[in-house]
Image 1: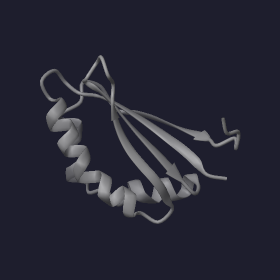
Image 2: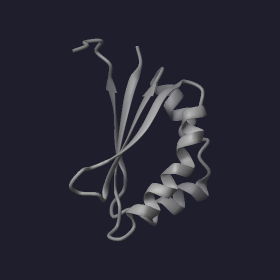
Image 3: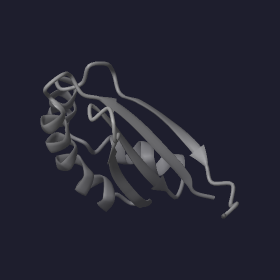
Image 4: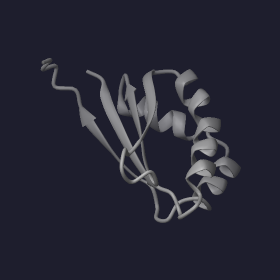
Length: 98
């Protein structure tokens, strides 16, 4: 059963455009990673500094492997743009549709 990964980012004041640009650098490689079923970037409607990435993976191992392919320089540049460390958790798809 697939997992959903929800990652939350909070941009530093005045850095949201830079953070979005930096995330756009990483998203194509994430989408191309083995086991990635989908990946979307969303911006909060009221607090534009809040960004989430919602990823769907065939399993947690696929996600872990993909993260290791992101160049350290990209991660370092991203960290310069956030007000606090990014936060992420995995969720199981319970197969209950609405």
